[in-house]
Image (cartoon, rainbow, N blue to C red; front, side, top):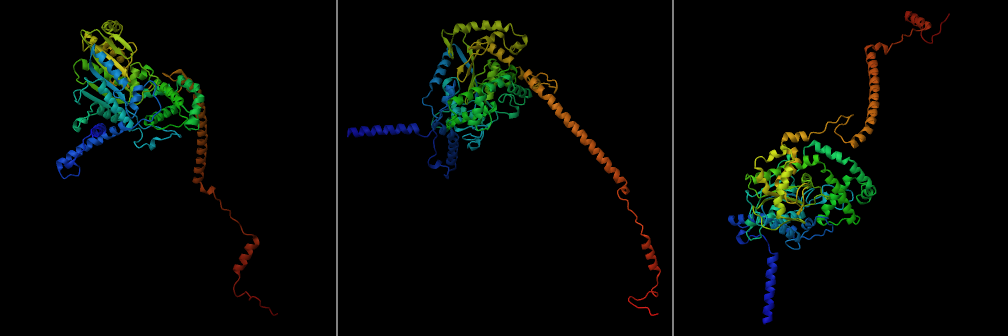
Length: 590
């Protein structure tokens, strides 16, 4: 009997534990709170709870699904974990490592502000090809829209932000502490909303605490030069075309000619060799399919995907490699981030967390301004995090970790001296932006930049970069966004004469010169034909008008005179009288 009671108790404990693990996270209406209840107050509360439940349904559904993707994102293990349907352990090991780095940095510095620039989650492909296993028009979400997996990615990203920066980020949303900005594109807006849902999500029985709506600000797409790099900039379009026609791209195509022919004819079914634009289409389709767990054809193996990623990553980064391209595209957002840091240390801003929800082009342009050109394009859910830190007056003895590097506090204390030596070599124009604060006041502020949760060292700066040095580096690469007049001048297209090309690279001038005289010859022949046809038309019109003015020349009637015997016979017949005529057939008697 005792054993039976013990077994029954264990069974009850297991059932209660299973219900607690899988029970609903949102309180459902019961009794008179059902939507069909006649009680108005109860019905209103029920509808409110159901609205909250519907808003969380996509996230909860995505959290319960499983990952079937076999592809891997090389060099992006944290993002690969975020792309999975279910997190095997919480917190992930890499998130725990990042949290340890942040806690170690907090021993010597104080975290003042966090600025995050993220790419949206997994979405529906934007293009297709003949042998696409699942064309975008067959996806239920619609072309370019965020998928449930993308919703899950952003929700988990918000949870990881809460875990890594717990104690600094506010528990509840407050307009004083948080500001969110997104591009006016659906997938970016939904990503921002779900990341904030994960950031401020609390697993309690009160639904009013679970879901906290956070406003997301945006502007019109045609004017959003921060989140959509290069929009409305004619010079940027010229730079892209020059890069596409560059010798590096042609050498890349020549080196992979046989493989591109295999890709276009045997894999994509184009009936021709693939171009680098076709490589971009294949990359987009395969990355979206892999994120959703869609099984790719057997010929799209790991080797083919890695080669497509390499080619696309080089071409994508090459678009922003030049200083002018980085200035035109990433300059507006970089300068805005500088203004956020300036106003924060000056006491003119209260936000602790600022979120920018954008696209892969947004991150690539900002990385180019920071002097970083990764070999792979930013995958779904990529992030750039800028930490603003204040150095303690008397830092304790310890180590401040930065990624794989370890920087001692003595290095931090001696860093301002090296920074002052660099400042003396800069023009006075670059120092005017910092005149609103004393020069010594900037020496205690430091910036840590993380790309996909890894601290990277800016060119010309230490991993823990002083704010003054950070402002110097970024200001030089974002000069095109200082005013609307300067940007209008910078985005003006280069002046090109059709016969003598100016401000154009030699490889473009040589290519166009070989075609110019052919075009001139064709235009000359066409002009001669037109002149000949014009002369013929004028001659014909003149002849036609001349004949209409003299119609007798068209028809001259001929008068025919009668013969002699016909005229005499006619005359004798007319002179005869009826009395002299004899009847027909009568005989004359003599």
